[in-house]
Image (cartoon, rainbow, N blue to C red; front, top):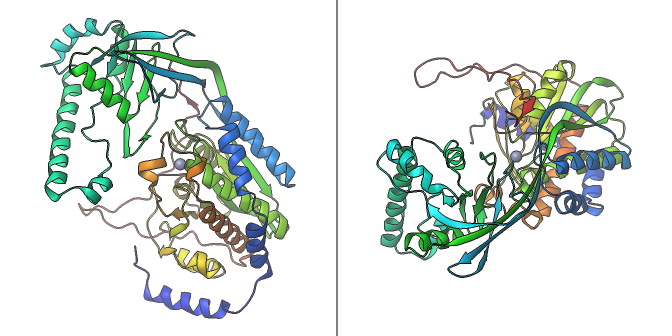
Length: 515
Ligand SMILES: [Zn+2]
């Protein structure tokens, strides 16, 4: 991560010394407005707590788009929702899961996205474990047994303690033993599923066809209390995810012959075909209105939590940066756009559609800055394979206050990102698009796509730094007398000696979630 060329270092140091001591009133005002009049907490509350998660095709996604446009209008920023496709419309209702035998306990769990509901009823049935059978023939013979039962299809985790907790308190021997046992169990479970002749996607459907009352699973995210919540594959019966603790309880009871029974009430509404949008805001350029600086963050989320750090924080960073820019830099040289993309989670669909629909903008992007990996302060910026990125990004960064700039590890020219978030949609089209990469804050374990991705995980001081950074970079990109170079690196050879290729522009899915 630290291959900064000597030349770059020299230029960078030179620029630092030049800018040292000079005060740029716009930069000062950006910092002042962000610090003294921050709207981040209010925006986060309205988006995460009031509107909630933003699953593609859900009414909440639509509400969020309307909310964003109204916010921009309130700040005198032009904004609109631009349609790019259609998706299966689905609205999450309540999930109530209770163990009713051999004793009563309310369980922590919820239906997956797009799960069928229970039709307004509470379904009570025995819980059984996916059996370990010799092969697919034996499994077909067993399948009728699933009729009327809830079937558990995930492995029972041998420990509910995250590895970091073991490493803090366990002995070397006990940790090794736990990991060895867990690896063996994980392999055995994968094998158990494989022997059915189905996979994680087709097994729930086979069980449903055999008349199962529902699918019970647990996708532990390897942290206390955190499960990842994705989409269901069943079409008629609910698929529910249950916390590690409660899943383990049911599993052990079923295994020891105590025949646990659960009651499930899941409400879900199919809402037909939903239109899908990007929210685009604009501060028109005065000298070069046909050149664009874009602030970028996907707007949609998974819906186990409220999408607070994926990507509520990226969203409010860009909204706040736009608000501040409009206030302290209302007449930019170049046009400053903000893109709040739909359906990133299903494959960068909103941004890929924008790239396809707006070649005139994409050809004239001065720079794009995307943020989408959690609540942390930005600690990394790489050149995405644009040969001269060190020059302009270095120059713009030199204007950023030292406390925000210092932790940022830069790497130039870097390599073009082929995916991961929406900047990649633009890089593929050859536009200088960059990722403002954040410090982790246990993102992958605790918040990314989990039921724990909620308001309380937001670290507002870090988000505030990021809003300042995004606003200053947009301001600098807008002011730069030169248009940014798009010259690309010669892609390095791969391990077989074949020259690498620049990522290809890919088509969005414009109609999703429907058969
Ligand atoms: Zn994301």
